[in-house]
Every structure is written in structure tokens, then in C-alpha cells.
Length: 252
Image 1: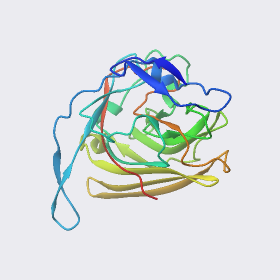
Image 2: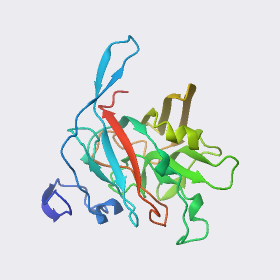
Image 3: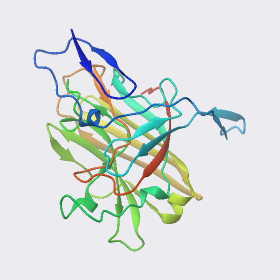
């Protein structure tokens, strides 16, 4: 059993024994994270019309960063760091800060790189860039109108997998509405399953996708890394970006 020094409020964390080859820690650990006290629940209305208490945390990606800090977090919202969950189930609210422009890209095509929403690593590694599943998002400057694209995204033995076309798009007015959508991603045998559902400015959004999993024989309930809101790609965030998350325990 080893002890590894981590940045931020988690001063010491004891790592459980892993396989013979210790997995590489995710790149998100290189950015210092901050977790603040819960700022209080918001009230929404359920399908029956009854008031529901919904707790929202906020991710913030600062200029020059890849990873987000978290404020307003409560236990399990959002799921983070080391986990044994088999999937993620959360509502996420994009806003106008997601319409970014990379003016000094690390590589010329960085505006087309996929950024990431919360996901999980897989196949006995804690590094999502090797194996894992999440949703990808990016702001397109070359479309009319300009739009935010959201796709299913997986890493399969370090190979990046996406769909031929995005799951859905959001324009500037959609982002300004700050409307939440429900995102579900989980491990299912030889597949990663993706689902998105909700309503944005009166428009129904409903999408599903499947991507292959490279380790179908590996238990879905093994130790994993739960990621957060992330910018990149290779370039860091050119402007401050925020997003709100309300996560619940995943159930297949």
C-alpha cells in the first residue's frame, strides 16, 4: 500500500493495492482542484408537478487550464476521483461560456478538438486517455450558425473513438437558456452505452449511441477514475468556462 501526495484540499490519499503494474494517474491531477462548501439546493418541478429538491454543483475551468475546480459539491454530486461506479448519471447545464475561440492554438486544428464532460476510466487503468468513456463537446466556428456539438467519446487502448456525426447541437440561444439535459454513460459488457434526454427552449433532445469497449472480460465494477468538466485536446482554455452538474447514483 502506498501513499501519494495529491494537490488541493485532498492532502493525503491512501491508494488501494492495484495490479502488478501500477496504472498511470490521470492528467487531471496536474491541475489543482478546489472544493467549496455546498451553496444550497435549487427547486425544480417533477413530471407529476410536485416540487423536487435538486442540488447543483458548479465546474469552473480557468484561463490556461484543462481541468475544472468544483464549488457547491455534496457527497456524490459530482462523483469524483477514485470510484467503483459502473456508470455516470447526471444533469448538466452548459451556458454561453462554452462558445469559446482558441486564438493561440497549440496545434492549428485545436478548435476542432473534443473537450470532455464527466466520465469514467475503464479496463483496470485510472487514465481516461487510455481506456474510458465520456461525452465530448466542442464549439464550431465554421458552421452557420455557430454551434456546440456533443458526441459520444471513448478511448480504446489509447485510440480515440467518436461518432461520424454529433449526437446533437446547441446554438448560442440554446446555451444562453442555461437549460439542463440528462446525460448517462455506462459500461455494458463489450460496449459503452450513451444516452441524452431533455428539453431546450421547447425542443426535445433525445439521443443514444454505442461505442466498443476494449476489455469486455474486465469487471465493470473495478476501481476507476471519475473525471469532471475538462477542456482539451491539446490547447488549454482560452477563456473562463463554467457548467453546472447535478449527479445521482447510477442505476442500469
